[in-house]
Amino acid sequence: MVNKVKWQQEWVGTTMNQKDFLTIGECTPDELMSLLDDALYMKKLQKQGVPHPYLSGKVLGLIFEKSSTRTRVSFEVGMLQLGGHAIFLSSKDIQLGRGETASDTAKVLSRYVDGLMIRTFSHTSIEEFAQSATVPVINGLTDLHHPCQVMADLLTILEHKGKFAGLKMCYVGDGNNNMAHSLIEGAVKVGMNISVACPEGYEPNEVILHQAKLASKQTGGSVIVTNNPIEAVKNADVVVTDVWTSMGMEDEHEARLQAFQAFQVNEELCQHAKKDYIFLHCLPAHRGEEVTAEIIDGNHSVVFDEAENRLHAQKAILKALMS
Ligand code: CP
Ligand code: NVA
Image (cartoon, rainbow, N blue to C red; front, side):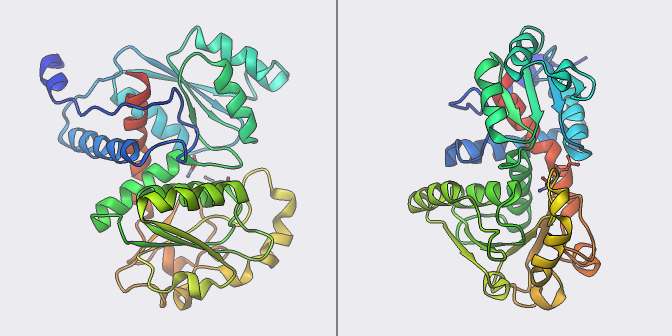
């Protein structure tokens, strides 16, 4: 039996100003730090085998319009550990995939469940979905953002480096994808300096970049974009990359292989980082493309800690939005 009084006394509260979790940019630095604190706290409880059923009896719907390993499993397991339940809804199986509108789907599902996570294509779709839903909506990845992944990345950096302020993060690869955008937003919100190295024509979304630069003025962080990977990696504490061809862009694969050749994270490039740098990749990875095996499987890589932290970071998000 769970000792209800005991775990309720140990509550580490995180309140969010917004109903949904769609981008990192919408959160304040305090909210992000509070979520990370709570994630660390629940990670400790879980490792110690202490029950923490903050979402007892609550149900989360998981809608996937793209493939997933980590997001699906970490949300399902996370809900179970929080005392709730998750329902996997592939768009191939539900009426959404046969043309039922996102708005009707959101309104109907809101009558059954206490929260919804969606992985979809356009970011506008999730915004429209969230507007129609009366329950919290969590972004499980859109073409523009991957905020849950970046919360896990921040948690991993905090665990390995013990701080954010003044750290240099370097992202090498597709500057215009979901990971690059959420990393830019996350890094500046917690006071890190982020350098993005990408080929010409693959620079980050201008609006996201502009807003991150504004946010950095208040946090002491910074963001720069360059076409020179060596300059970006120089003295980096954290080196990050992601696939060159994201889900939904498969038609561009050959062109991207050519465009990104000089942007592989390999031993030669990483010699320019700090001696104790850590390497992050959200996974799935393509060894021999965006990263070599010696880097992703080497001593600096913390990619499996990072993958595990999806579970802990998301439990904090779920608890903040649904309890
Ligand atoms: N990193 C990540 O989101 O993995 P999945 O695509 O497996 O969910
Ligand atoms: N940028 C990648 C991330 C996968 C988790 C994609 O969208 O495919």
